Structure formats: C-alpha cells, structure tokens
Amino acid sequence: MLQPVILSGGSGTRLWPASRETYPKQLLPLTGPESLLQITARRLEGFAAEIAKPIVVTNEEHRFIIAEQMRQIGKGSDRIVLEPVGRNTAPAMQLAALVATQEGGDPILLVMPADQIVTNGSAFLAAMAEGLKQAEAGALVTFGIVPDRPETGYGYLRTGEVMPGASSARKLAAFVEKPDAARAAEYVASGDYLWNAGIFMMRASVWLKALAVLQPAMATACQSAVDGAKRDSDFIRVDKTAFTACPSNSIDYAVMEQLGAHPELGQPVVVPMDAGWSDVGAWDALWSVSNKDAEGNATQGEVMLESTQDSLVFAQSRLVATVGIKDLIVVETPDAVMVADKSRAQDVKNIVSRIKAEGKTLAASHRKVYRPWGWYDSIDMGPRFQVKRIVVNPGATLSLQMHHHRAEHWIVVSGTAEVVNGDKTMLLGENESTYIPLGHVHRLANPGKLPLEIIEVQSGSYLGEDDIVRFEDTYGRN
Image 1 (cartoon, rainbow, N blue to C red):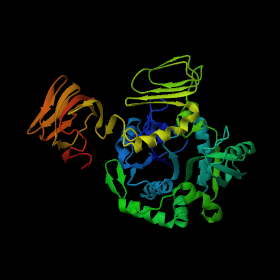
Image 2: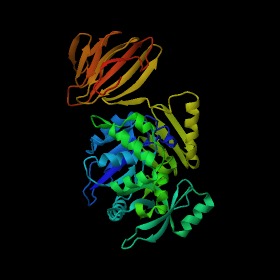
Image 3: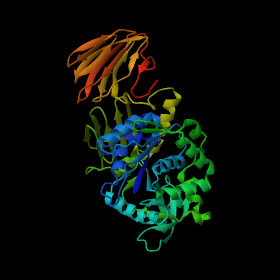
Image 4: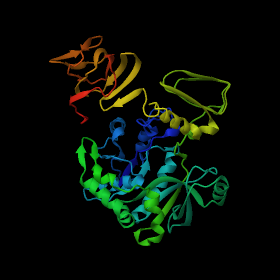
C-alpha cells in the first residue's frame, strides 16, 4: 500500500499579492483551474499500485479550505492532521507516519510538498515506480531533479553508484547546501548532482525506527501529540502541549544526512527525475513552467497583450492590458497590483516585509475570505458601513451569533436562506430581505442544494470581525 502524505505548510511570500498568509500559494490555482494542492493530490492518478487516500498535514487556519479543495476533486479524507505550531518537515512526517500505522499496517509513505509543479506526469510516475522498488527493499528514498541550469536557490544531492539491479536509482552520497554561482556551474557540469526536491519515499516502519534512533526527543514528543489527539470531523487535532515541546527540524537534517553513519537504519537512495519540476518559489519560476504564446508570454485571467514579450501577466478580478513591455511580471488581485522586473522576482518578499512593518493586513489576507461554510468578499466600506457579498455552501450553517455594535440587512440574490432572527425562523427566496437589529441573536443557513448568495449591509459604530458572540457553532469556533 502506497500512502501519499501531502505537507501543506508555508506562506509563499515571494508570490505576493496572490499568495497571502491565510491563503498561501498551495491553495491557489496558479497554472489552471485547480490549486497546487489539488494538482499534487492528483499526481499519482494512473500509478500502478494500490494507493490510500492522502494524509494531509497542515495548520489549523487552512483546515477548512483544504478539506473543501480535497472534497472538490474526490480526494476527501478524514485524516487531515492539524499542527498547532510549525515544527518543520521531520515532525510533520512523523505525525503522518504515526497516523498511517495506527491500525496496524506498515504502508510505504510518499511525502510530497503541496506547492510544487510537475509538467511531465509520466516521467514523475516512472520515477515513483523506481523509488517504490527501492522503498520496498528497505531503502530511504529521495528524489533529485535533473538540473537544466546552474541554480543557486536550491540545495543539491550528490549521487553515488547505481543501486544493484536498478535502472536509475543511485546511492545518495551527500546533501549539499545552496552553492554560489561558480560552484553551481561545476555541479551541473559534473553530472553527479541533482536538485533536492524535498520528496521522500520509505516504509513507515523504516522512518519510525530511524527517527527514534536519530531524534529520540522528536519521536517522543510526536508520539505524545498523537496519543493525545482528538478527532474533529475530517481533522485530527494533535495535542498542542506535547507538539509545542517537539524540536523543529527538516527531514534532511534530522534523518537523511545522518544515515551514512548508521547503515543499520537503511540505505539512503536518490532517484533522478526529469519531469518538468518547479517549487514555484517566485513569479519567474511560474513563468518558466507555464504555457507561453509565440512571444514568450504566460497569462492567466482576463488579459490583453499588445507588443508584449517574455512576460507573465496574472489577472484575478479585472481586465489587465499591457503595451510595449518585456520581461515583466504583472499580478493583479482585487486589492493590490504588483509590477516587477522578471529578474528581480525574488525581491517581492521585501515588499511583503515592508507591508508587515507598516501594520497593513495586505500580507496576511485577501479581500475575499474563506470560512468553513463558504466565503465572503468585502466589496465596499466606509465610515459606519460595510457591504459584503456572502456565499454559503449547500447544507452549510453559520453560527448562532449576536453583535454588540452593528446591525445588518440581508438581501438574498440567489438560492434559499433559512434565517433565525431573534425569536423568528423564516425562509427567504431571491429578492427577499430581512433586517437584523443590533443585539439580536441570528443565524444564516443554506437548506438547499445550490449555493446561497446574499448581500449583507452592515451599519454601526464598530464593524470589526471580532464583534461577535457565538452561542452555537457547527465548526467548534469560539
């Protein structure tokens, strides 16, 4: 049994303004209609092996979005593991391994970051097949990307001799830190080095044994965190106190780099992979792996180009037109526009740092905010008023709540609304409305099979999201 494990952490600050802390790059549809998470979850489709439903390791803030995105593609799982704090990839993999073996099995784990792109699916599956043979024999396998250029932004893997009977798998000789330009050129010219993709495959018991020997404090903390875990719908909430005490380290540093001194733990193996891989670390990387027109332009959304070359134009909410530009990145979202020289794409993170330093929220969240019941978009606001477009998923219910400082008008645009307003419960159809006075207990629900869309007009002295008292909540929020 092959058990996919998807690690969905990170904030993707170099892909601002599309990527934000509350909606990072792995949740975005950067190359088509599906998000990077969804593409990752589909990556094993067509693989000739028995495959379990994915285990996803993420943080609490993204849990409902991840559950919904997985459900949308038919990959829903009741094993979404929630980390109360970030502790890097080794503890995340350990949590997944413990969950995967809870019922007594010993699957082979395939650990994949949620934010990578692979454009050659058949080459990816061929590499997985090669890795599976090695993992079944007890090896600890990683996958190295065949480099197509000297790259200073990636770590490297130095390869050793070909494994006996293997077609491409090699002994893993060493992990190498990010090199300078001259050293990177030497690595590529030698043919002995691969980029470190951060993808791993090994039997769960092999990983658990290795971590227990090499990182006993981490193994103990993770075991305690899983032992104290609580089930909550699709989610596994590990014990916060135990996991907070866990040391933070990566899979590379915690285990893989130390295996040479511990041959009893298994052979480290690297499988070369030439599959159009990218970690989409910045906008120029997205341009590199995207489909382009005859002039070298990659676009998404409503875009109109005139005398434009070798550029990326990414539009989310309106027409973006360019005239006479070359080697630029243009990214439009409903609340921000970013224009950058393609060669300076890495420096977008500096803008994010300045936004945070100035106390703005644009680095943290979008205008459109996702909730477990659907989403809302703050389409207008001013002194003492705010207008929201709200969409509630079929069968979903908001909390029973009350506000101290604002009243609300609800107008149904489409669908059917079930409304609790004080001591009354009513059904509202299209073009019908209700008024929620300040201090009234109220609730909105969608009893239908189609999305419910309403316009909410708030008015009052304070309109912050923290002006809410919840009396009942399906999703366990305070």
